[in-house]
Each structure stands twice: as structure tokens, then as C-alpha cells.
Amino acid sequence: MATQRDATVTAAYRRHHDVEAPRIDATAFRQGWRVRSRLDALYGDGRISAAEFQAGIEYRNAWEVLARSGSSEVAVRASGYPNPHSRMLALCDASTRIRETDAALGSLAASLCHAVIVEDRTWAEVGRRWHRDPQTVRQWSVQAIASLALAWSRSEALPAPTRRRTARGALAAS
Image (cartoon, rainbow, N blue to C red):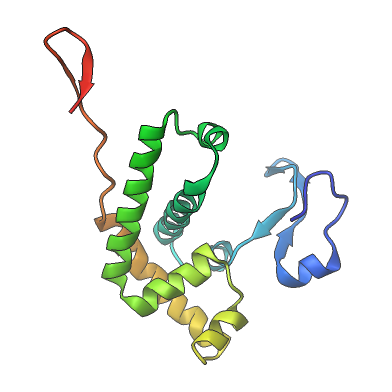
């Protein structure tokens, strides 16, 4: 992946990724190269709504939480989890929401959402997997993302642990 210090992105990288150059002006402040994902493209083209785009981002973030589960203690602290307990709660929450959402979507829509949103597969790759035209799987993916938005909003995040005072006046999680 290109870094901010790179003057340009190679032609080979551009063949596999849709990238946007750094841009600093009155409307944007992007200091580095940005890879435009399939989800970004669907939203930019007006094929999915803002709510569907947001659900896709949250779904991808939940998968990223699970992917980071094997990371080191230093990386865990740097990733925003103040302690191992909150990290475990985040893992349980992400796992539960993904499992509930995928069950509500069904296997085809869930695998399309994973391929397009999480793995960011090209339309040609997704089409080959289901033996369909890339335009067909793009439309199927739009429908799957619409279903994802409904299922994701119905799955609840785990409630934060409540705190109560013990007999000694100390706070304890319940």
C-alpha cells in the first residue's frame, strides 16, 4: 500500500485498486493516497443510501475488531481498548452482531456483503465466484447491502456494564 511519502502509486497498484491522489484545498484535506473501496464507489454512484453506507462501514469495522483479536498487548492499548476486559467485550459484541446479522441475511447475501465490504473483492472476482456477470453481482450486492442495513440496525450492541456501589463504597461491575 502506498504511504504518504510516496510521490506516486505504481501502475501495478492502480490496476488492482481505485486510488485517489492527495488533495488539500477548500473542500478536502487528504494528505495521503486513498484507496476507494467498492462500498465507497456504490455510495458515490448513488446506488446505496447514506444509512446503507454507514451500516456497511460498521459491519466492516466489526470484522476488523475480530481480525485484531490476535494482536499484541501494545497494539490493543493503541487501538482504543483501555484494558483486556473492554477488549473482550468488544470482541463478544462484534462476534454476536456479525453472527446475528449474517443469520438474518442468509448465506448468499452474507457472503456477498463479506466479499464486497470486508474483502473489497473486484466485481469480476465476485462474478466468477457465483458464475454471474459482474453487473449482475453488483446489483445483487446492492440488494444485499440494503438488507444488511436493516439487519444491522436490528442487532443490538451489548449493553455497557453498569456500575453499582458495594457496601464499602467502591464501584463494582454488575
